[in-house]
Amino acid sequence: MLKLDRNNPNAFIGVILLVVLVVFVLPDRLPGSIADLSPQLFAGIPCARLPAARDLAAHQSILGRQAQDPLQLKLTAGAINDEGGLVMRLTVANRSLGTAPIVFQEDNFVVAEADDDTDGFGLIIQPAPDAGLRERANPNPATYDENDIRLLGPRQACVHSLELVASAAMISDGGSASAWYRMRAAGEQQPQSEGVREIFPDQGLDILTEGVVFSEEVKIAPRA
Image (tube, helix red, strand yellow):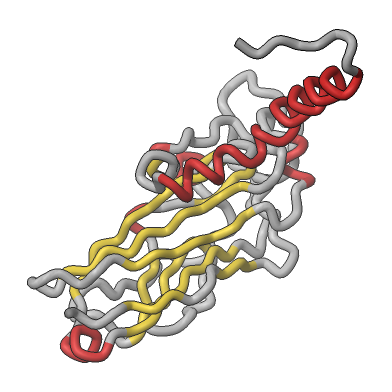
C-alpha cells in the first residue's frame, strides 16, 4: 500500500501534480485514447439519432451560435468485399463547448464524383461506384424543417455509414473519397408553436467561416 511521507515535501507536491493530471488532463485526453484503442466502442452515436431541434425561435445554444468552424469531418473506407460492397463511414465531431446545429437528412445525403456545391452533407468518390450516386433533392432551401436540424452537443461526435457498390475500375485499381458539409445561410425561422416567444431571428446554422468544411481524402484499396 502506498503511504505518503508527510515529512517529504516532494511526495506531497507529487500527489498534488497527480490530482491536477486527473482533473485537467484526463478528461481531454482519455476519450481520444479510448477512441484510438477501440474505435467501435467510442465512435459516437448515429447522426440520425441526434436530437432534433424544436422551437428554434426560443431554444438555441448561445455558445453554439457564437462558435465558428466547430465541425471536424473524418472519413474512413472499409475493404471491398467479394460482392463488390463497400462501406464508407463518416464521423462528424463538434470541437466547441457549445451545442452546434447541423442539417442532417439521411435520405438527402449527396454521393457524387465531384463537389456539387449544394448545402448539407456530401461524399465525393472516384471512380464512380456502380450503385449509390445520388443528387440532393430540393437543394439549398431558405429554411429547414426543424426535424432535419440535429443538435450535436459539446465535444460530441456522431457517425453515418454509407453502403456503396464498387465499380470494376475501383475493384481492380482502388480509388479515393472525401466528404463535405456546407452551410452558407443561417436559415430563416419557421412558424413556431403557439405560445413560444420568438427570441432568435434565424435557425443559427451559419457556423462555418468559409461556408464549408471538408474531410481529408482517404484512399480506397483495391480488392485483394
